[in-house]
Length: 162
Image: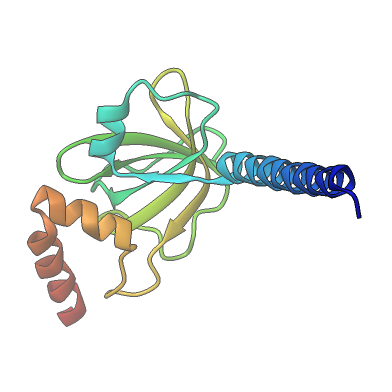
């Protein structure tokens, strides 16, 4: 085997390895881009206030407590508005559809949707807690950060006794 043939084979292997690495990098970049578009970020009302103004096309989740006395049914009956709070900031939420059976004021909720240009959250989905002891982890963390976790625990204990 001649020296030039050996160099030619090594060069071909290097080109092949380079092309394979380039293809793998391109596939990884496409996958990460597609993944980024499908990720929905969670925000508490305080975090949302810090991020304002929010892109109206960005899909996100907010969580907190449904503020007492904030639930209102609009004219058509299928659209409701309510306020989600973490005891520091509030977010007005509008939702068209049937609310979960366990949805009520003073309870934890997570809503998925987007912010409209007026600063109101338009929810496509509303999730309510399923029993007296459950609260979504993100909501509980936001309430602990705001210092109102103990209040909620006392209220839940009182509700369980009644």
